[in-house]
Image (tube, rainbow, N blue to C red; front, side):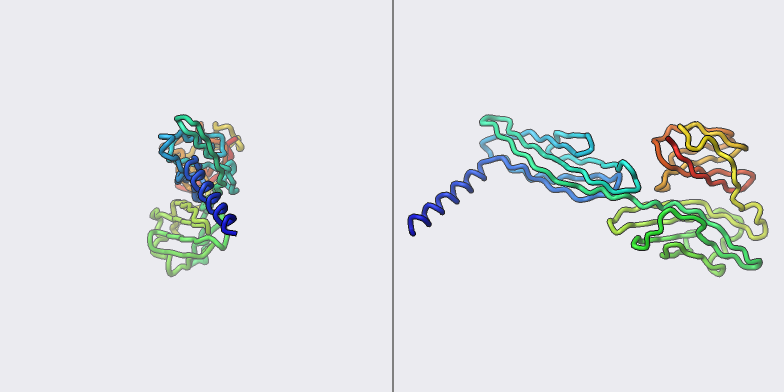
Length: 277
């Protein structure tokens, strides 16, 4: 019995010693949101007898790195859907005896919410209330922070701003109207648009419908009438194109996807959804 215990102890010690003398590929990484930077924590073991080692990373999206402590930005194939990527790390000694080890991890990349919205005003004659006319994301599990004119706030999914709160801003001046969304996975998006409404001059604040063609487009767009101050935003609300002055056409050099064109025509706000192929 003593001999068996002694043999077991010797075998355990030998295996532990062998493991400690071998290269071990080890790393960790946290799940991230679309467009965010993944940070890889490399805790690989390289015994001193090997001197140093080469590190080869395969990030699962067709890209690689040879850095010991890399970072990498992941972009979803479709920004509306999450995606998994399998990461491989290979650690190989630079000196002889040559030794190699590898390991895998999976990272989840979550989609960012689409904060785009359009507003409208319900006019009851002497009173008006601001409502959300259209909205891209309405998931009740998200955090919503609406801010109108820097002071009128709401945390509802699709709020109605009553007259007593918005009346100071119904003066025809232009104010910021912002929506911030955070998902349960801590992915965030912000969209900001202009709010301008004068109950004494409703015709100046109506949303004007203008034909914009072709749509879908490869990038070159034509307007059925002249537009001024043309802006194009992606679905996260980021401005990707801006042309001051009056235009009858624009030529966009954008990645394929869905965008929002905003402009002004005869003091009226124009908003149009674009598809770039």
